[in-house]
Length: 248
Ligand code: FPP
Image 1 (tube, rainbow, N blue to C red):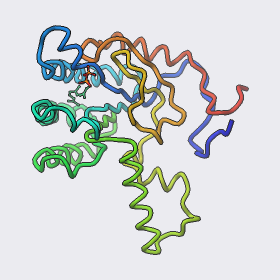
Image 2 (spheres, rainbow, N blue to C red; image 1 turned 90 degrees about the horizontal axis):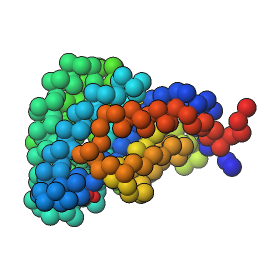
Image 3 (cartoon, rainbow, N blue to C red; image 1 turned 180 degrees about the vertical axis):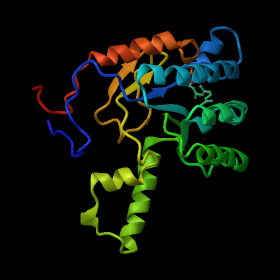
């Protein structure tokens, strides 16, 4: 198999912690429905889990955590649910922001922002600015994110640069594409986890996940504990990653 083109790739021996874990937080709705609760109750409980998993991550050796909070497809949900989710994102930034700043967490948001309400965009930009110099931990939250949308936006920007004469088509390399993605500057995810027993990728980080390991857990996100998280991270440590090369 082709081994990829990025110089970032190297064979890693079993035993290491994943530096970058990305999570598809799925199953909030089912968690709530199975208890006769409104779906938003599941999202609220899900926000509590976000707090817990963010806090547990540095002790597990993780330096980057990326969470899929809202996809480009999630706008198709009932308006009340979309509004409720946006309210939860606002509340999370307002309630957790100061703590994230104080604890040395750098927060980034990926996804298209223009469709979000102006006040939410301002909260997001504010937290990014306040945490820009933090280095202890990196939290990235995907809001209105879709992998195809991200690649499309990157392609348009690269095409514009070519049209403006800033580069030629031949000069476009994988590094050019990476630099135009929302995740520019972030390492690729080592481990991508999805909760709720669904075995799908749903457009999450398609470029960045080319050599990621995947783990799928049965628990719905509101039931996903720090202990379960630690178990998955330890399981990753026993995998040998070859990135298309042959083990030495
Ligand atoms: C997927 O479950 C979950 C979401 C679409 C929303 C994720 C949002 C949170 C966990 C809330 C807070 C997040 C932050 C970053 C503060 P689903 O509703 O698709 O579940 P279902 O498949 O059972 O319907």
